[in-house]
Length: 272
Image 1 (cartoon, helix red, strand yellow):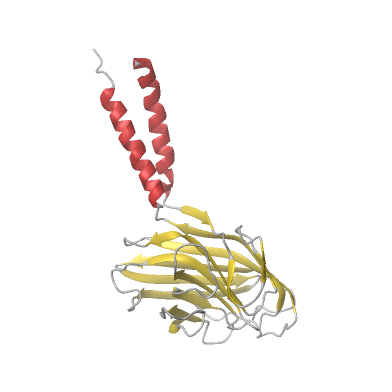
Image 2 (tube, helix red, strand yellow):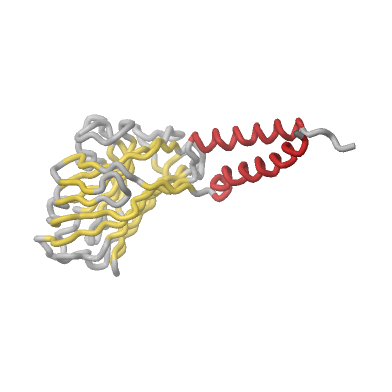
């Protein structure tokens, strides 16, 4: 038994280090799956993966869930990232994608996405090349069945220098981050593709929906492809959430391993 305990001790310590390594590094990456059409009509392929395709990719809101992330402490953040590819657009004018590409992080119902379900409250960034820059918005309505419709404007991003355009435009990288800072929310985002770039920033935000001090909870991502997209199909690649907030199960595992290690350490006989 003494030999077994001596062997178990370093194994337990190694397991504890492995289990808590992401905590030390401060980054947890979760693929986003379970994609469904929340508003509009489209056929979904590979919706259970992080790289779904929507046919047609036009005039739809698509959403996917992820495990609840609560920004409970200053410095906590949640980031959504993906790459959008649009193919065979029937309208290819230089400004047809303005206001037609929007991405958001939301607090919505738990579980799988159901068409038109409510509430979905959260934050949205909108692409444009207009001089004022794309809108930054907050969806505050608990009864709005289309989460990208009629949100409240809270700022503007920088304008793209020309415009994402064409029948088969370059892949579009979408990124949106919410960070808790001094009990308020900071928003940063980016929509880019090829030589195109639009940035988004709002700092120190609070509202009746997301009051100072929180709670700041998020569990859904959404993408709006407006009726100006007119793509035969639209696909996402490597949709993922990055956060420094561990899932409760990770904390429980680390705590359990730590307790087990402590108990084995106590039971080791003192050297004579």
